[in-house]
Length: 142
Image (tube, rainbow, N blue to C red; front, side):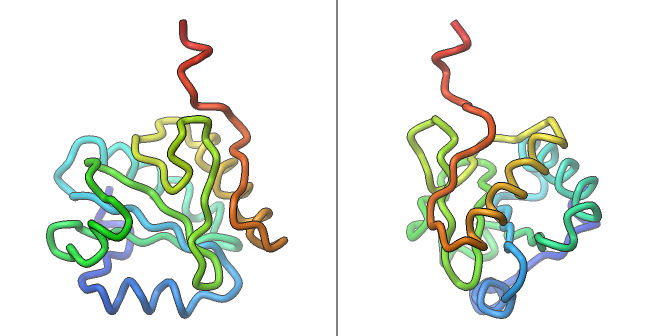
């Protein structure tokens, strides 16, 4: 499904995508198109992108083709989703301890829409850290 979403092929393109968007949240998926986790996430993004076009814009970045941000954003996981608003990285508290990014594939489309909407609403109010509508910590799984 990654062929349905815009790809950024250089560090300059990533920077321009983040800098140029003033009204919407920029959602970046860092990873590889051939990775199974990324394929799952890309399917969710592609199927929900049209519903969120008023407040979010989506881009895919191959971390092998564009290694510029790997150490800066600690992109060591197979699939990473990060949020930016008005040239600012928006952190999200998912209950996992890592507030910088989502580093697993969300399979539920409504959960992803809820997270993006929460990020947009919080970022619009000037918050740099928003709290996820769902707690993804492991304390409820045992």
